[in-house]
Image 1 (cartoon, rainbow, N blue to C red):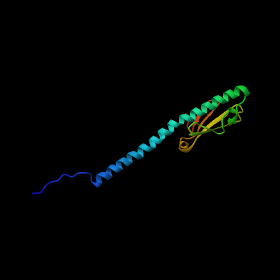
Image 2 (image 1 turned 135 degrees about the vertical axis):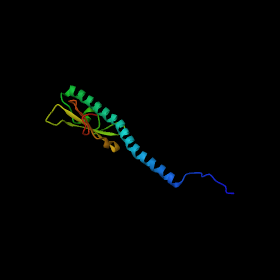
Image 3 (image 1 turned 90 degrees about the vertical axis):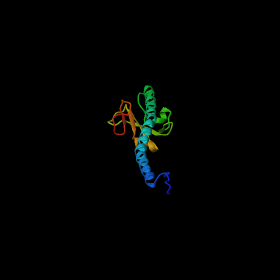
Image 4 (image 1 turned 180 degrees about the vertical axis):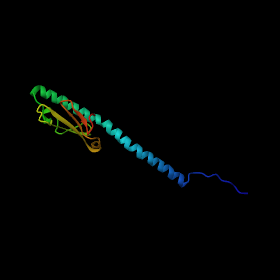
Length: 133
């Protein structure tokens, strides 16, 4: 009389199919997660720009002009955001405008993939190549 035994465990094929499925799911989920994290860190760059624009307006009230030198605002030049995700600089606006300053927050490290955040004292706000933050 032959005894029938139950198979226990997984075959190599079943295991390999599972690994492939997990790999496909991870290849979709990881880039999406990284993009979500970059978008979350963008708030730090926006906050830094807004803080510098407010300081520029206070400086303008006292001196009737803006400054490209962030040290005149009491900040380091370039200004590094609190968690180090952005390096912020100032420069005169293009088109020959003398009463305008443009603030640029460039991403540092992995945040560089998010593109630069740019705002000026005329109200322009741009991220990379898009027209809004």
